[in-house]
Length: 320
Image (cartoon, rainbow, N blue to C red; front, top):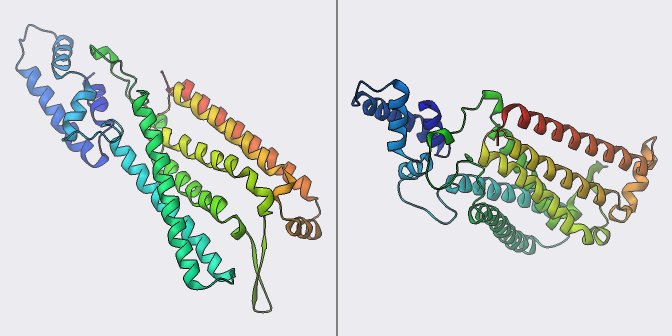
């Protein structure tokens, strides 16, 4: 129970301070128990101490220091963490796309730099707004993906179980996924004409774009939703930090929606550049339509595999 209480207090705190606060809290609890009546049993002492210390979420807020309510103290550190990742990823994505534009564009360098700065500003503003909106909704709706503890009168019985090591969600994997997704989002949304096959013939660079820009335009909102859903999945994993049945169901549902939207986009022949279709069929033994079909099958298999894996972990390790 003591370990569960300490875990509940420190789980939402910045990682660099968790070890120190855990030791401090353990010493405090030991001292409080030592000062109690020896006629009480060990279990009674623990129960009394934990009740005196109170709701671990409120104690965690006191350890954080000053109250910060842009998003709310429960999510503020994770909000800043994710915001840094998203802003950095957008910067990398826009910079890569602009670099390719400089190489293959006939526009002046000055015009390209002006476009780069304005696009970067707009993209970062959009990314920051969406991250803020997601966390604000979690706070406003009081969606508890942290501990599942009830509001009001707190009881030690509400303490979460200590998670098994395999039940913990790798923050590193989620961060990498967010970075990759956020790099490709601005490319698809702002510079789809820069995505294609780059090759060199006779000392000259050549480029064949993947997409028909006019055909792709109506699907930009769907593409944006696909990338946003995938980022949201990883945000939920980072916020929670461990597998539960609730997290498994949410991520499975979002995975299915994302896969369905993505298949809907790639199956539309209008989005593909006719030249890339001709080159593909010229140099490969299968048709472009068959390649799209195989890609769709792979997407469905991956989505099913990820869903099964999430549900398995949710059933095995999760309670709520």
